Image (cartoon, rainbow over all chains, first blue to last red; front, side, top):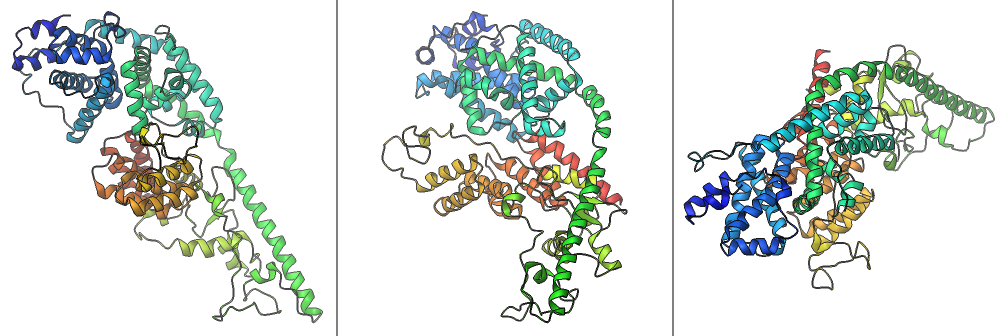
Length: 215
Length: 401
């Protein structure tokens, strides 16, 4: 997982984009340590030319940006491409020291992500692959892939155990995007009953994937 | 925004379903980027969603069957309600007629009661002439069938055909129509026996007033074909709107000051905020969030005077009009949002205008608005697709008639 550092060793500006595009951002977040790397430090270190800092940024935020892009686009393939673009744009800005408030690095990443995703929606086509054609496309991280497969299996297992009504509630709210009031109306149930059932189901299903500690 | 609030208010689920407004989404995304727990939670929810999508068809197939039997009692309830309304109206009319008859027999000028005044001239027994207005036309009493504005909030107007009967209800199906040959309808009944219906009753007055107000704007619109009870309910559900989400969280400059309350200004420099339009907007949105849509409309219209090109003002003004029961008023502000073209509220404007059109029974216009909303980027794509499919189905049914 040192592709970024290795690729940018030559400090060739033309190779920089390539390096970022090759970066595997789907690595386990456990290897990154965001607590010890404050966003402000990270931005400053990238601006000073420290290549390890770029790798840290990708490790820390890559997966989160991907989750956001997936939530917005609802397409994992497109989200993967967009994540590359977003990280590339952020690193470029950091290198050029264009992040005005380094302490608000996360807000900067969010803003960049939002703009690029909205641009994608406007053009309604996947971003141009120009400049990346000669580059090996990032392979889907096997950890992420197996993790996703395991999750799908667990979800299917859990859904089979749920009652039909519970399945409906989850489907209408999480997939169809109906509000609780709409779901309640559709199922002729009270709003509170739907809310309680949905909360219980979401908690139960997400806890199946490991405990989520709360702040 | 913190993890506790995200869990408590189920913001992550709303975000994933594209039901959070832009400002709240931005804030949540910024939090997710800085919080490993929440980002993990989002990934898990996405996993659940993916699993559900895979099973969506089978879940839908299972659950649609029993629903057909769940509402078997509705036609019965509608029939009973119609009978009660007609009986009550008949009783009132007979009492009124009796009073007039007694007073004319006694040779006295009767006290002009509300009931007598409401009786149309041609149906009224011999008695005093109705009071004339300055123009020489009979003064009409306030229509009993018309509900106060507060009662018709969020209630789409449903078609009033000759064979339809309005079912009064304060619940979700308020204003739904029922058609049935077995039901005695106002105009049919009047045709059979002109004196048999209570002139002052709500049942008789509705077609006279509502039908005039609802002059067909789109003559080709199949909405003017008679709707069955199920179609009426379907149209009502399509037009039923919930208020568009809004949070102050995104606009930190105008964040609520805990000491001085929501109406106070708290911009960085202290003292009065320089932008009066924004302050009015904030006040309007406070009223909007509290469900005082009438107040919200007032504030937002005032805000428009100083800040006419702001799409958020126009958008929330349009939504407030819909929520206040004036869908016809929503077209102008929502149209302004659309005219701007590149607005974050563009999809939502089409979506809510579609709702407003559905409430006014402009089905073809509603369909085109929902169709626009489906192709635009935003959080209402899934909803718009569902509504578009439903309205297309409804129109197909009506055209088949």
